[in-house]
Image (cartoon, rainbow, N blue to C red; front, side, top):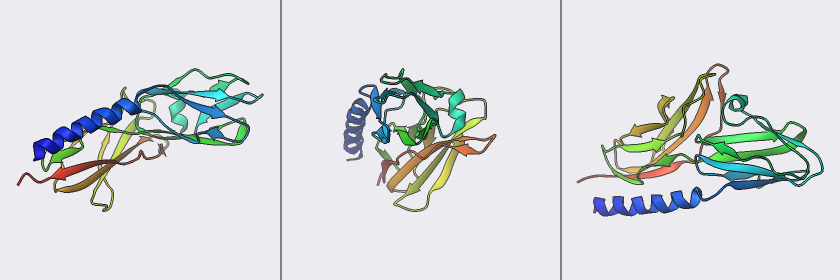
Length: 202
């Protein structure tokens, strides 16, 4: 029974990963908003911005340390499209237009799991990024978990791209992560939670 559940979860994971990682995503810039205001992309995938206005726009990550890592301050000329930016790390990344204070948006990059159903005591692998973390901070991934809707608890603070976790009890486990730059204690936002079902072997 457990093997069947694990096999079915593996198929679902592959299908969902394929759809999320499909293509470069676009965000449109108008005079009053980013559309969509929140854009989700697969880890390691790209976003470009299409400026539909007659003025230049300057995209700036709210978490300033990203500018020296994977999100440089990006100017988008009037009626043009920016070069695509790659988002290699899991997190929720808010940004704004430093030339227009009314424009705010968010890029959301979910973490990945290698299986959606796991036996108690077995290891689920959580993928947090695709390249080494930025050393100018330093920057680390903060990973939290909770079971059956309980309190969130930190299970790892790491500069690695992945972390393993063994559920200690059967139930619905949720995981989330964000980035932290230690030097200035600056954070990205949390990812959406990823749900893993832990089942008893008995």
